[in-house]
Image (cartoon, rainbow, N blue to C red; front, side):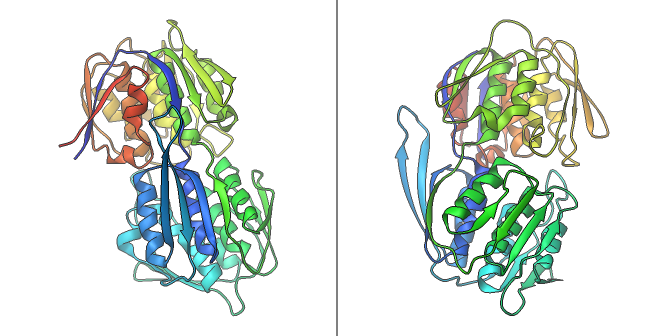
Length: 430
C-alpha cells in the first residue's frame, strides 16, 4: 500500500495548475446515460473515483474512449473523454460497484428517466457520516416514480408514459439529490421546480452541460431551479470547471508554509468564503491572469473561526485543511462542522504531530502551537488525508502518511505539484 513521505520546513514558491473538479466530473459523466449521442468532457482529472465510475458506466453500456495530453508547461495530465451510450444494456447497479463509491448511486436518475426503471444498490455507510438516500427517494417519487426497497436495493419504476414534472422542495440542501433530480427531470413530461436546491458551482456546471445537450434548465446557482422536460437529449462537448476544493487546499498549504504561489487555471470567485477566511488568517490573495496568487510573508498565522455551511458558505470539504492551518495560528480558533456528523477523524492524527485540539460536539477548539513535529499518521478519508499533508509540510522533520489511496480519490498528482514548488514530498510504493 502506497505511503507519502514529507519532510517539512520548505516554503512553497512557483505555479500550481489546478485540475478539473472531481465533484463536477462525476455527475457530468453520469449525464451521458441520458442520451444515445456522444458526450465529450474536457479537463477530466485522472483520479481513482473517475476510473471507478468509468467501470460502472461501462456496466450500463456506455462506450468510453480517452484522449490524454500534457498541458503546456505542466506535469499534470489533462484528459478529454468521450462517452457514448447508444443503448443501456443493464439497468442494475450492483452492490459490488456502488459500495465502492457513493456517487455511483446517482445513476438511478438517468436510468429511470431514459429506461423507465432502475435497480440500484443502496450505497451503505460512509466514514464521515450516514449520508442517507431518503431525499433521492422522495424527490423521484415526486416525479411519479414508484420506489421500493428490497434486499438492499432500490427498485425504481416510472409511471406509464414516463416521469412527470412536479414541484419539490428539499427539506435540507443536498448536492447529490439536486444533481439526480435535475437529471431525471430533463426527460420528464412537463415542468419541474426544485426548491431549496443546492447552489454549488458543480450544480451550475451540470446544468450548463445539460442545456448544451438540449435540456431547458433555468435558475441553477440559486435556490430555485426550473426544468422544462424535453423528449430527448443530444450529445455535447463540455469542459469541466476547475476544482475549487483542490484550489482551496493548495491555497491553505501556501498559507501554512509561507511562500508565493500562482494557482493557475482556476477562479478565485469559486471560493469567496474560504478566500475571506484565508485573508483574515494573514494570507495575501489577489487575482492574476488565469488564476490567483497566494502568498504569506514571515508574519504569523492569525486565528480564525469558521462554520461549515452549504454553498456559498465555508465548504465542508475544506474544513480539515483549514483546521490543519489553524494548528499553527497564534491563538485559539474554532471550527464548527454542520454538514456531516463524523468529520473530525483527522483530529487524533493531527494530535500525533503535536496539534492541540479539543472537541465539544460539532465544534473543534484549536490552540495554535509554535511548532509541529513529524510523525507517522494515517489517512481516514479524502479531505482528512490532505490536511495531514498540509500539516506535514510545516512540521519539523519527517511525516509519513499511510493509506493514501484516500488522496488518490480526489487529488491529481499531488506530490508532483507540491514538489515543483519546492516541497519535499515523495510517494513510497510498498
